[in-house]
Length: 341
Image (cartoon, rainbow, N blue to C red; front, side, top):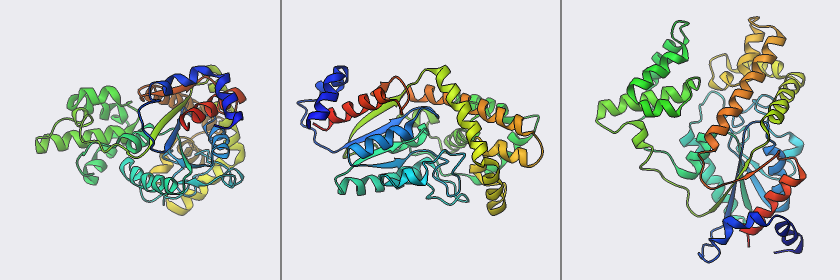
């Protein structure tokens, strides 16, 4: 290991703990770094820092950043940032085609194989926990999508008297354990869980929560290092609020107007945080101040849900702070250096 990396590692000896138990295991598969954390925690800054120091390539794991044209609201890296190191799966999907977690995993695994063949370090970055789980651990073999059932459920949820709470109550009756793991406001996941539960009832298969435990196609051929960003919550919320203000100032409403003009209002990514509120502003349903407040509150809530999800991820090395802080970058760099020994 080069002297500078030895010095970094020696400055943070606690980071050696996860490696000591594996020193003699003989595993020499190449390393994959999964960088996770809530929105606004500095994943982009840290991923660029690490990719430049370890000949890395960055693979997106954010469900909205996948789509073409969804730039400001998805907080995609800038063109200048993407020019610094290779980036993959940013803006690669047509917004009219919904990319499921399973489809994302297939695309990302193909890219990981290419990065591996080049002898470079893959760095998977993003805040969509289900996509990360699909990539690293695989998904259970659930039933095929039923667009007819989904349309009926969406229509019921859209009614003021029903809403997302109605769908969540329905899921609670079908599969209480699944309802306990999925937030009531996460309508797409609730609908998928209902779809799986209905399919299980029709075919005699096990409930969704039991299917989660079997049939997974885990990623092979890599040693996985999960690095998690865990900044102080009040500081994180302050950053989130500032970033939302900058999104509006950078043209989020104008970006949304262009997407509506090109694709219409029914594509799923336009229901994402930021775009949903900007569309309501364009329709005259809210004021600019109300739209900003709603986006800020939505992102704070989302960050909290992400924290809950990622705490269930196995073997995460948690870094206390933001990804653009030198001390956090040094700790992350040391952890990777140790795992590359």
